[in-house]
View 1 (tube, helix red, strand yellow):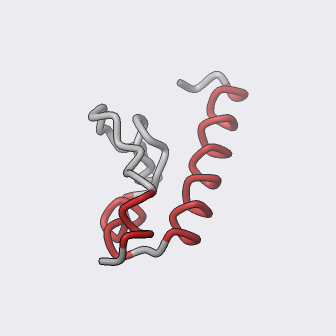
View 2 (view 1 turned 90 degrees about the vertical axis):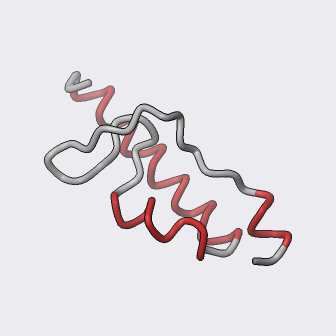
Length: 65
């Protein structure tokens, strides 16, 4: 693993619970995204974090949280 991969830490907050779409209700990553996190480069991790942020906002806006 390169040092750039170590710079972006996992957003896991230890509130792991998957919804019906296999999205974690703690960090809003998909199960697959969680599994592959350690293999991703910095750019991909940042993209994934942005997707998770959008998912979180969508959930807040739909009042399903």
